[in-house]
Amino acid sequence: MRIAIIAHDSRKELMAQFCTAYLRILSENELVATGVTGKIVHDATGLPVRCLYPGGRGGAEQIAAMIGCGEIDMLLFFRTCPCGHNHTFCKYNLNSAGFHI
Image (cartoon, rainbow, N blue to C red; front, top):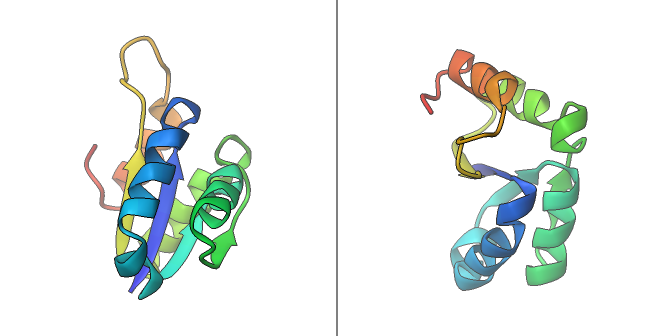
């Protein structure tokens, strides 16, 4: 299974802890992540991660396109509270790819 991982800056530590806790399960799958997130996952777990562009520079759109093309089986999205944050563009792309946030 191909798993994509996106984490907003304030959730990267939580994401690293999650990946460490579920290392065995994640190791049985192919991981794809936005730039810095992928590096953090690799550094925390030692797992190979296909790193795309950083989220703010097109990485979220790359993952959305992969979802739309059926290339991603699961998305792990560690996001901040939407209160006061403008993630409309990211939400729009994920919603248009079939994910409802």
